[in-house]
Amino acid sequence: MTQLKSLTRAVLGTLALALPSGLLALGIVAALDELLPRLAATAQRANWGALALEAGARWPELAGMLVGQLLLLAILLVGGRKALANRSEA
Image (cartoon, rainbow, N blue to C red; front, top):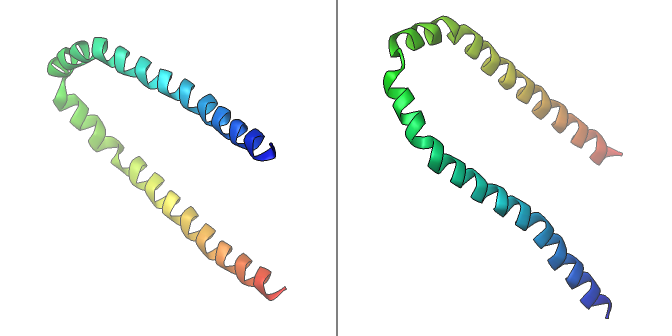
């Protein structure tokens, strides 16, 4: 009887997670179906030269963010290894 209760909870928990995400995905697909032609028309009229100029002016910001993220990742990796080594010694 205990296994049946745990199995029932597992199935209901899975459904509780799967149904809302499935409905959200269907809603996104329906919205994209309506919006995609408008987005394509807007992309054709875009001023691509101005967009490239703006992106060229902002590349140092992107590079700085990437370097910062890599630095944080390196700190976490080194700190995590030290923490694991200290924990295994204790």
